[in-house]
Image (cartoon, rainbow, N blue to C red):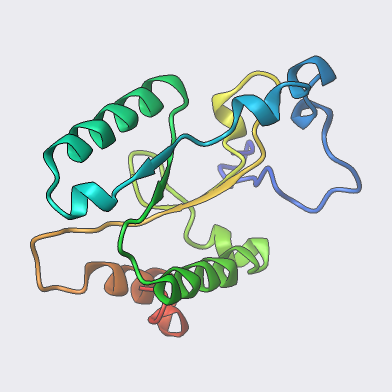
Length: 160
């Protein structure tokens, strides 16, 4: 925030990449190897196979502890639905920065847009954007759809 209390975005259009986003080469040499997402195959789990379930749980635990993320395969989600979700998110993240900032994550809130997360780091910043939104599993209410319509607008109903 600037001295007037206005949110300043770290992702404003810049003529170059800010130096605090550039990592030293010695950290990048092994990055591709270190960032290989562990793969968790859910085929056996979805078929109710006890050993496959234990193995998947072990892989997920190890991946979360060691990497913080993992890739899931054979999860049963329709590839067409996945493509639609990617397309919807691309639509949001390609919006002009002022439009994304209109739904910025406010202090104390878990939901909204956040860019770069520069406030969390002192040097070598990760350059990323996130959009967090609510979801409730045990309700018939269209929580996600309502969130998108009420925060971003009616044209984002399909995103929900």
